[in-house]
Image (cartoon, rainbow over all chains, first blue to last red; front, side):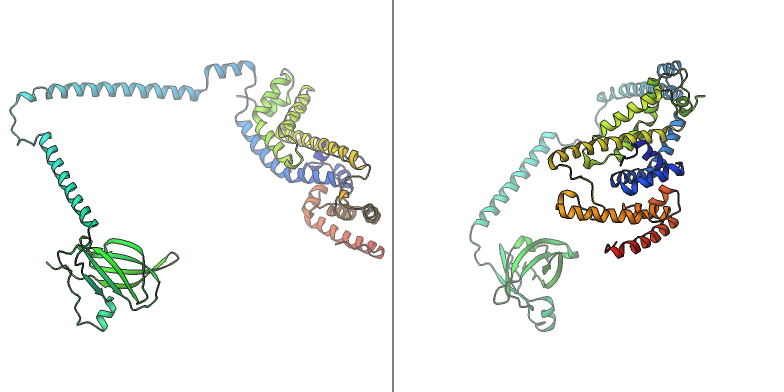
Length: 272
Length: 197
């Protein structure tokens, strides 16, 4: 069996192929799987080629190549009308910029002439502090900050004597059962406060996120990993300065990315 | 006003083949390369550059022979297609030659009856396949001409749209002839114990 030439296959795949060519090729394809495979590729690409040939034809018609050597030379030597137009616009733009620069230079010179006599006039405004005095003030402030920080660091390393321990009940429980019971105020001199948080949801070992919240629901501090002990309480030691702005303490449980409020505790006031 | 490129290409007098080739490739070079890329299967290991070069040489020969090209894009597509098919055939021929050297004269075509390559089958199975293929071929030859072509192409994997496009038929006509032809073929093959899917 002799396979038809590639030219014949391509001719049969063309839309304008004669019926005899089509049938001749079809008779061969029935018996030859390789030519059948080749022909199917040609058929699939025929539609693509028709579409693209049309587009390329249009493009070639509009941007047709020059016909003679002289026109090729002249086009490359002198360029198109668009190139001339672009060059003209650029020249005008450069000229306009040059004028603008010269005008600004003149204005500059005029302003400089006006400013020069100024030092001879007596000063009438209030004297501002000299740069060296301002610098000295800032240095003194920074040194004071450093002293404060060192003091806090030293006290943080030392044991906290007489740290108050305050039992906190959830806000809901306080409203319902022990409304009359008063939570003691935080002593003013305390460095830190130990809060024992009681919960209405016993779940020993459960871990919670904690938030100290100030007025307007502003979060003062946040942390995670607070665990419920076997006696259904949670313990949290908070430095007193942190409590200055905090009004409530909130416990959240986290499941996946979802966080839900478990308990909310009002923070007692600091004793004056 | 410049004349359109197809007039330039259709008028060989006064223009040398090299310059016409340059102009044609300037306008249609990307199209030619895209056509080659689409025609060239990546699995056969055929180089796109080689096919494109072959297509350019064919084009140059055609222009040198002062052939009038009235539809450049269509002509370039045909050149790309023939170059691609010839390249594929050359690669296949080389591979078959190597396989023949290794496996003797068993043939390498895919069996029409089983769809398996001969290398994967025993000699007895190959003989049985050949018998089945011969019977199918005999039965096909008994069908009326149009049904024979429709069913034969269907068995080669052509869809009714592709069959219609090749033979200049409408798709419903191709589908109808395939359906009737298959019915005839089953009727002829069933008594011989061959079931077509």
